[in-house]
Image (tube, rainbow, N blue to C red):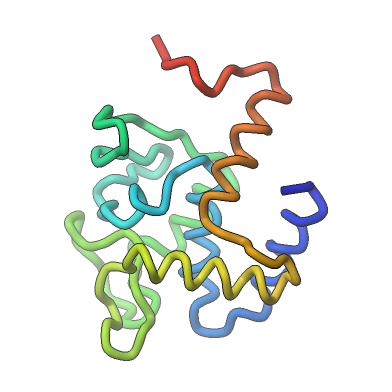
Length: 154
């Protein structure tokens, strides 16, 4: 995505209504290169305030993902309080909650993530926006900073 498109996405979050807090947290996580499938399995305990521990990965290699300060701040306001029921959540609670009427306060599904991002894409007037678009953008940002995103950390 271009910088302009990324700006359109963040601006579109102003029009999200009841899912705004949840979708902002989702966008922040996606902007750090996580896959939708990895996000689905995350629990509150995977976030320590600075890092997200991703245990269930496509490559079966667990990893720590450091979050930018802006993303950490967004999570602190939404993760420990469930957006819809305003009660403290346990470390085993799902990190991202569904707002669907039949699944409210349950784990947001893989398809729920896709639906949320497609909705944001419509609001931002970006056709065919998908969660994986954020992973490609993250990799591009790393390359522009001189970091090889394919190299594992030592």
